[in-house]
Each structure stands twice: as structure tokens, then as C-alpha cells.
Length: 427
Image (cartoon, rainbow, N blue to C red):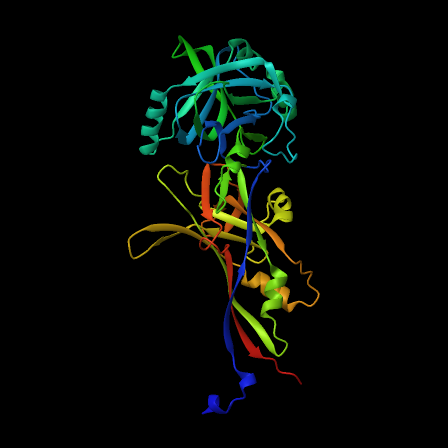
């Protein structure tokens, strides 16, 4: 009875409107290189393009005022690289060079770093060839939860220099002595990409001693890790992104990491506000959904586990200042799996911009642009034991996402707004 006598102006209206989104795939010139897993090697992808990964890395000394036993002599110095997974077409070779210039500990480096400024290419410390058999053996180890590694022997003369105790008085003295190493895939070698989890140098030396009054030669190894106390920068380059972009179907968009393709979404904020406004009603958004559905095939790269949707002008600050997603002005979404009635599996990323748009509607002083240019970025997250995100960085691993920029053959991608209108009371 109450509803029947209520004025029509007091009705709560539930409404749905959809808005078209312009999308554009663009080439990423570079991205902030603050990653903790390093991409080294080569990879060839028929859809997204070819990728090269190399690494500039400093190492930290084992101890201040380090001393060696009397009569100790260097036995070996080698680079050891542990890697957790592999994406490969064939074997690969690496060259290792000595750096001539220190990396700045607080410098903001990007993946397009110019190695010529830091590397002395006249000092090659060593090389290694990983064959198809080596790669197959590594695959087997990974399948059994064992992390494979490769090592590169450095010249004994360099190992002997590492025995000079005067170089261990402090960190900067050591870094001036040995500025770091550069690991780069050899020109013309095969195509295999490794994800390096840890990198270190290992100095082995031997010295005479007595055990139970018997003359004995003992051996000891010192580890010089490339860790977060010093800098490492992953250099990433691509050789044919433009041709791949030119061949992309018009109804498709690409996201390719690392530093390959991102997709820009234009959010028509002013159009949404104008189309949903009602001077006699108060508006409350229930949802403002964008659904990105992956198109997959057996030969595709892994899909990104997480995507970040962020204003294009805010990308640099977000990563350089180690910001975290707030789901208000930037949006972080995990990939979700859906299985339909026909048992087909699809992968969807769903963003809800309701809070973001509602704030602009409610704030009379808000700076509302006609269009907000936002971008989809694949990211890697670090999560605490309580489930809280503690760090977010650009996705450094190979991943690829292709999605349709149309709902059907004629309509572009949509943002679907569901909202209620309430009677606006006045005193």
C-alpha cells in the first residue's frame, strides 16, 4: 500500500547504460627496470615479435676487511646463474663482459639502458653455449622442483686480483675495483629465454695447513651475490614490434611483456556523467564494468596473471615511487577462469570503475576531462602472508594477451554502467 501511494518522483530507478571505448595498441619504448627476476636470452614469437634480454649486475663483497689465510692462492672465479623457468625455441649462447662504469644505486634505470655507457666490450670474461640437450635437462630439473644453473669460468688472472685484501676495506672500494658484469646473448646464437632468479660470483682459493699434524691443502669458496644491496638492470629490446603491429587485425588489441605492447583505453568520463545525470535525482553507481576477454590458442605465450589499469600520465610515478594499487584511481585485477555450458574455458579480466566515476560525479570541484586516457599493464605482485600486496612491479616475464576490441563485428568495446536514481530531498 505504501508503494501504491508514493509519488512517482520518489521511485528508486534501476538503470543500465553502456558506453563505447576507443582502444589502441601501442609500442612500449621502455619500462622502469626495478625487477627482481631477470630475463636473459632470446625469444622469437610469430605474433608479438622477437625479444632480447641482457643483464648489467653489480655484486657485493662478502665482508669488510676480509683477510685470506697465509699462502692462499686463487683457484677459480666463476659466474653462477640460477634460473627458474625457460621459454625456448632452440639453444642459446651467452657472452660475459666486465663493466667499466658503476651503476648508480638510487638512479632510476629503464629497460632501454645504453650498455655502451657501462660495459667494456674489450674485456670478455667468458662465454657459454647451452645446447638443446642442456635445455632439455634443465626442463627435467624444473619439472622436479629443482632449480638449474649454468656457470661461466673467468680468467685465473682476475681471480688472483680478487685475492688482494686492500679491496675489501669498504663497499665503495670494492665496487671501484670490480664494477660488475654484463651478461648478453651472443650475436647469431639460438633462441632461448631464461628467467634468472639469482646471480653471483664465486671465488675458490686454496691454502696449506696442518690437520692432526699432517700437511693438508684446504679449499674454500667465497660468494659475491648480486643482491638488493647493489644494482642490477635488465636491458630489454625488441627487433620487429612495428611490423607485428602493422599485421595486427583491426578488431584485436595486444598486450605483450616485457616492454613490448600495451593497450590504451579511452574512458569517456564526461559522456558518462552527462548521460546519467538527472537534476531531480541523486545518482548511485552500482558498477561500471569493463570486461577484457582473452583470445587464446595452443601456441600463445602465457597470459598475464594480473593487469593494472592506470591513467597513462601516472605510469612513471606509480612504478618509480613504488606505489600500490588503490582500486580507486588505479585498478589491479587478477585473471579469472570461466567455463561455459559447452565446457569451453575462457580467461577474463574485469575492471569496476564505479568508485572512480562516482567520485567525479559527486565532487563539484573535480577536474573532469572529456576522456581519461588509461592503459592496461601486466604486473607482478609480492603478497604478504596476510594477503596484503607489499610490492608491485612491471611484469618482466614473457606474457601475451590478445583480446577483441569489439563486442561483435560492429560495436566497439563497452563500459557497462549499472546505477540507481534516488529522490533528492531538499530542505
